[in-house]
Image (cartoon, helix red, strand yellow):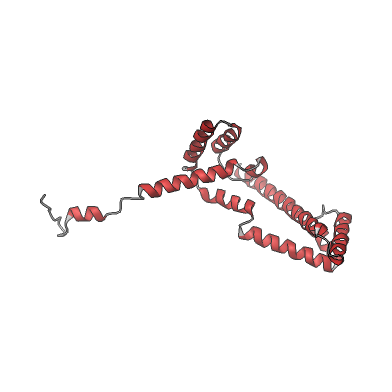
Length: 195
């Protein structure tokens, strides 16, 4: 075979071998498997969690169908279909929401630390109930005070921290409810502005 140099004096066959031809077949296959795994994680979510994930309607329908399928082959084919649908969307927001569900996002970790500090401060000073009610007007003051008393008694008697944990759950639920209502209000405002 005779090699012919191009006008620049370089060997054209050699340049073609060194030219980038895009992602390899292996990397494409890896990416497809990652998207299928992401789709499988979506199928495992509860309906409430799934409603919070930013996905298109066709993918949502496919996920709900996959939840209904019990036969192995039908479910396998549906998971492949979900993987194909996932190729046409940006997986980053979906992964970010899944990380929030797992408690892995920085914002979620910071929020948990803030609530843990509030719980500890509330145990030390009952006057913080005013700040809690100011932040979350729907808070049940009597229930919070009872949990505080029980948590202090548990600590004193070296008992398992049931009330201590319950106090955190109540604060977390209040915070989530407030966050969800803010998100709904923001979505309504955005929708009205777009109309």
